Image (cartoon, rainbow over all chains, first blue to last red; front, side, top):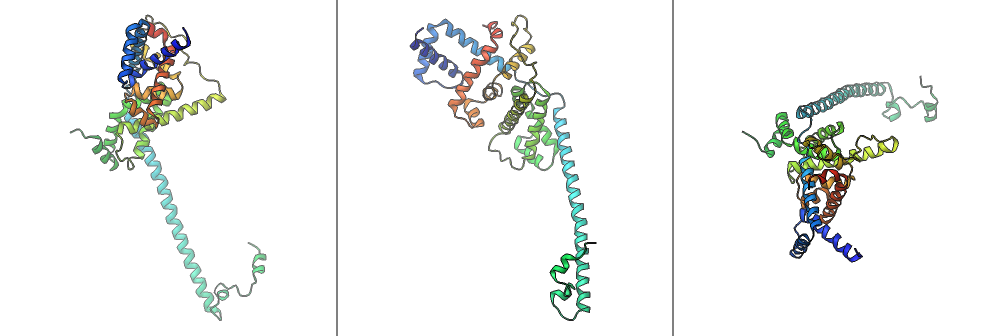
Length: 144
Length: 184
């Protein structure tokens, strides 16, 4: 078969495949009908395509293993419980931290009041009892 | 009284687990057809099926109903299946692939006239296709979406879907030659 003939055959074959999934234009429909009438090979090809498409449609799985819905629901429940556990942990941590923060703030306030009571002025240094130290001295203080 | 999808979704949003279970039962076959069509029968297929519904459950509040529940689930299932195929491909780079999916010699239909056997062979044949061809084939011929709907789901032009469909069928025809020979 020459190049032109091969190209025409390829085009007809494309039309044949497309005819299953798309609406062909009138001109294309005519072209395909004519080709089908003249070629036994093409008619066979059409049958093969139709049979194959039927095989593919029939091969569709209908379901997963039994009790699929129950397994999904169990997983969802598990995820929700895990999420709740994490949320509970976060809430507990937040509540404990809040208490520590409040206690810390109260202690700090008490110290400030105490320092104010024994100090002579209302400067920041007096409040934090840091007037006797320079910044370098503070840095040089032992940690423990 | 049977509730429609919209009512089931509203109930599921309000933590009614029976409503969501009803949705799973209603769409299990559709998700199964998509996932098993893409991945074949394997343990991963069940996991992906479950994950599809879990993702849907987690996005219930965001679901506005622009697409039908079936289409929405199919999109999730296709994306998850494609991710799984990518993971398998990566894995294959490091390990030898399993060879049990080799169907070089599809038996003649006379030997395998059992419908179950034929379905299995067709599914194995589909597994041989590249993911991009497999996806259009599954959506169009297994899930039964129209060409336009398939194109919309995959964000592809209709022309691309048509050419991929044709090429997928041509490739599959070569793989399933012995099976098809007995049918014509």
